[in-house]
Image 1 (cartoon, rainbow, N blue to C red):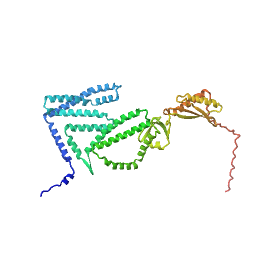
Image 2: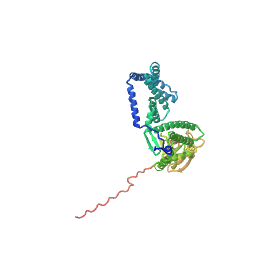
Image 3: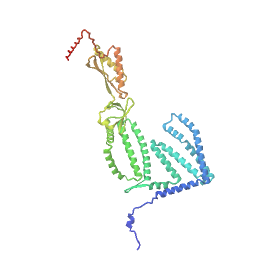
Image 4: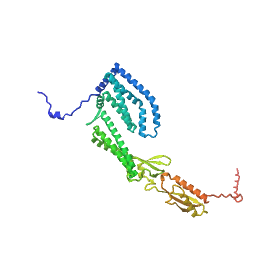
Length: 462
């Protein structure tokens, strides 16, 4: 009686795909490399290697001759746009490869026309490699991030090399054989590389769209600065989030397992990243309530300056002395902040001074007001005022109040200019500014009491 397999067993059996062992793939690649090296020892293959070496040397010599002239020519292009200048610098750096490609393809065409195809195989492969590397170097220059640009460039060079040499399938099988299985999920090196490449490309596209859209949002004068920052941040989160999840789905990663991961991340945020989350939430609140915005002049403790930018975690405040303080968003929410230009740019400043009792206070007030009006930054439609605030020990005390509309120009300097105007005006009108005086009286010797001499003690008897 023959053994038969039931139909049910055949239908429910999982489909398996044969994947060669990594050791067999490596041995196969090694054998192909040995065959290729042995083939180089043949006469015409050796000739092709020497021709390639000669073209490399010739292209190097031409690049050395043309390079300095091209560099001097580029330095004279001062009116060029930035992208043209960057392209010129790229061409200057890749001169040797450019001349190698320009010399190799006519040589390959000549060899294919007048010799057998086998006598130009290495020449054609080297020309294809050089051309592909040159195109990848030029295209990847569009990526602004240096680290990402290097990764994409080297990955592209490696993959193009494998494709031209015809070992792409073997390399793919080798990378796919190195895998890790977690339950029903199988993660291989090939899947990871695919994910990195796809997500990287999508991130570059998201960055391009974000930069273009952000510039248009910032150019719209109808949107307030704080809402512009909020819209840009929200757009960046949406674009980069979509790029990440779409990239994972493109390589076949099941996103349902991310639910457990998101819960773990939430627990981690609650315990270890509480401050970071607090700053992020505070940043969103600042953008929504419009309490501060780029360009506002604020005071927080001893820090006085204007807001340069609003970040997700901190606010950049630039002071008058050029220092840039990165203040956490939480401090701006919980602390007492003085916003000098929250609802408008008008700021009132007070300065105090005193004059001698012999000066007419009516004249002093009039002269002080006129002196304040003579300073450029003091507003004339909000007229300065001067009042007596007290009678001191040696002076009559006054307060002078005036308004300015440009607090970003500084407060100490405008106070100094008003004080200087007061000094000049008082000098012209003979108004004196008193200072405390002390009188020292010297007592005569006869008025001083004569100190009494203490009686001497009687000698004691032995």
